[in-house]
Length: 216
Image (tube, rainbow, N blue to C red; front, side, top):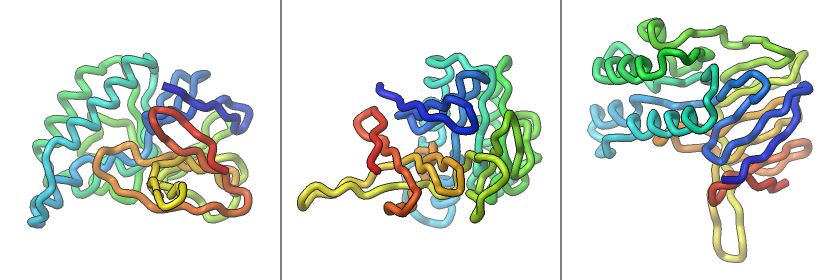
C-alpha cells in the first residue's frame, strides 16, 4: 500500500490508504468518525441494512495496530453514532475489544454524535472538543476560521468526485484546508460522505486502489 507524507506544524504526518493518519514521532494512530452503532439504529427504525459493519470497523483498526504498533490510538470524534445507553451489545463488544489492547492508550475527542460518552469511560479516555498537543490542535468539527495553530479534524466525511470522460468515481479524501488544518476521511464502514470540490487554498488527497493520490 502506498502512503503519502506531509508536514504540519513541523510534524511529519503520513496519510494512510486505510483512511487513517500515522504520527510516527508520537507513535500515534489517528482516525476520525467511526460511527459505531449506526447500522443498529437504522435497523431499529425499520431500515433494512446489513449487520457486521461495527465488527469490520474494529477489525480494520486491529489490522492497523498490528501493522504500525502504535503506543496510542487517537479518535477525532463521533466514535458512536447515537446514544450508547441503548447499545448494550455494542458496549460489551467494545469492552471485549478494549481488553485485547490493554497496553494501548485510547483517547478520543468528544464529537457531536458522542452522546452519553461517559458510559465508555472504561474503554476510552475522552478529551475536550479542542485539545492542543505539540503545536497541533485536535478537534472534531473543522473550525470556520483560522486558529492560532494548525489543526486536525473530521466530521465532514470528505469525498471527491473524479471524472474521466463519461465515468465518475466518488472517493474518500483527506482535505488540507486553507484554515491551516487537515480533515480526515471517515474511517467507519457505514458512514456516507460529503463531496468537497476544489476551492482556492484547498488541497485534496484521494484514497484510490490502496494508495493516496494528490488531486489538486
